[in-house]
Amino acid sequence: MGELDRIIGVLCEVVERWFGAAVKIAYGPRP
Image (cartoon, rainbow, N blue to C red; front, side):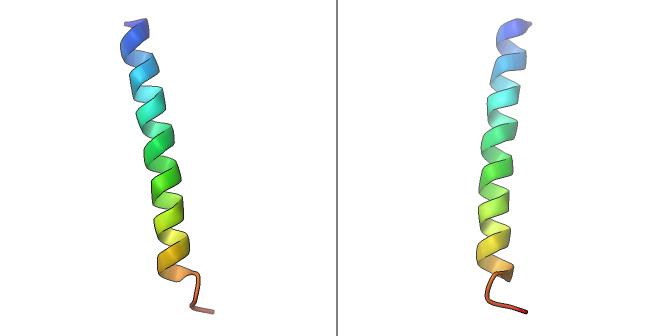
């Protein structure tokens, strides 16, 4: 269970970073 929690935590962090970067790229140039 601990291993699964660690994997899910890492996945969530990666997805959150990727999503944040994608939003910045998509909406950055717009006012």
